[in-house]
Structures are given as structure tokens and as C-alpha cells.
Length: 316
Image (cartoon, rainbow, N blue to C red; front, side, top):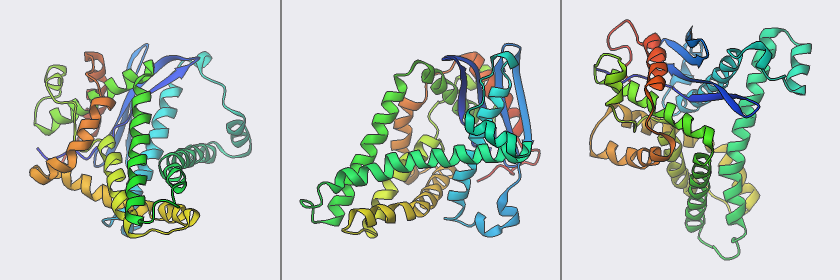
């Protein structure tokens, strides 16, 4: 069975600190499905995918497609959260914020939705850049008078970057609600493995599968951390502010290379790909957990909607 091209964040939507809606998003070669569990059962929203590379083929080229797909993942993640929130009873839905209200009052419904999603994506990227790019550069920048070697300085930045990321993930595991997100994350991986192994998509078959998948977003982020050390070592600068700008400008290059690595690791199984996948899969001990059967049911519901009708269409 060919590898399923997937994109499958798990999510929870909360009201007043109490999680009400949980779900999973799966993405196939032609369709995307969001399955959420509500008080009435499992609801699935299925959409045909429209790829920007069909209009602009250059955006589907290797090294370029990684950044494009990463941005698309963030947009789809925000859409999944929005859809899940809409499944809550109307009287329990949160009031939109002031900015959201202003946008909805001054723009059409379709334009307002795009603006709100765009702002959420920009803020998400800004947070990631600030936490994992700017902060390590600033912290190591205090040692500029001591570290004369740009290679050593960049290596230390990479270590700090990884430490911040691991600390962030470790603290996230301490949040009670995040525990169930990790369980849904495990359900996604088990369901995808079940499909890739050519088995019938049943709870029993999915339950037997591994929850550690080489194409996980967690693995991708860790590969980004490693690739950034190598790329930033080639392009560096003594001035901290210039160095910070260079790192931000080179981020699409880092993401592009990382995407090609995880794509290669996902479609091959040899000693090299196992080594490349090992750190990310080890990290999944933090970001995945064994799901219960109800979570597997949600994952299966989403997966069934995105399986292509043509054999081999899901190959990487």
C-alpha cells in the first residue's frame, strides 16, 4: 500500500476552561476531512482540495513546496479549530474578540473569515519565529565577546533552540487538556499506519498499530531544528541584529530542505531514513499517547473520507 499523503492535526475547543469539542483533520491527495466528536456523535466535514501549485506550478517544485505546504498546514489547522468551535451549541459559543467583531462588521462574511484566519496564521508564525529563532539568537548574542568562532556560536544557538523546543513540549504535557490532544495524535498515527498496511479500517486493527510515525509534524519540526544549525553555519554574521535578520530570511530555505528530508524518509525504509526519523519518533513519546477506542473512531471517520478512489494516487 502506498504511503498516504497526510496532514492530520488533533485539536480541542474549550469553553470556559472545559473542553467540549475534540477532533481530527486528515488530508488525502484530493480531499480533506475534519471529524469532530460532539454530544450527538461524530460529525465529518469533507472538502475538495484546491492546490495553489495547480495555478502556479513553480510553487510545487522541490525546496519551494515545503514552505507552501507548511503555510497551508497552518491555514487548515485554523480552519479545523474554527469548524470545531461552530459545532458547539450556539448558547455555549464564545463571543468573538474585538478585532474579530470589527472585521466581521466591515467586511463580507467570506472576506472576514479569510482575514481572521490570516491573522491567526501570522500570529502563530510570529510566535514561533520569536521563540525559536529570535530568542536563541539574542541569548547567545550575549556571548559574542567570548565566542569568536561563528560555527561554535551557531552550534550553541542550535542547542539553545532545541532546549527551548523540548522545554516547551515538556511543559505542554503537564497541561491536563493537552494529554487528550496527544491521545488523538496517537489515534491519527495508528489509523494511518492501518491504512498503509492495507488493513481494514476498524478500531481493532488500528489499535494494534504503532503510534510513532516518521512523517509526523513533530518529526518535521525536529528536522527543522537540525537543518537550521547546518544552514545557519554557512550564512552567519558577527553583528547580532544582522544575524537575526539572516536567520529569518533563511527560514524558508530551512523549511524547504527539511520538507524534502521528511518526504524522503516517509517514502523509503532503510538505515539512512531510520536514522533521520529516529529523533522525531523519539520525541513522539512526548507528543503522542495511547488513544481510547472512541478516539480511533474519530480518526477512522476522517480517514475514510480522504482515501483516493484511484489506486496509487496517494503515493509520495
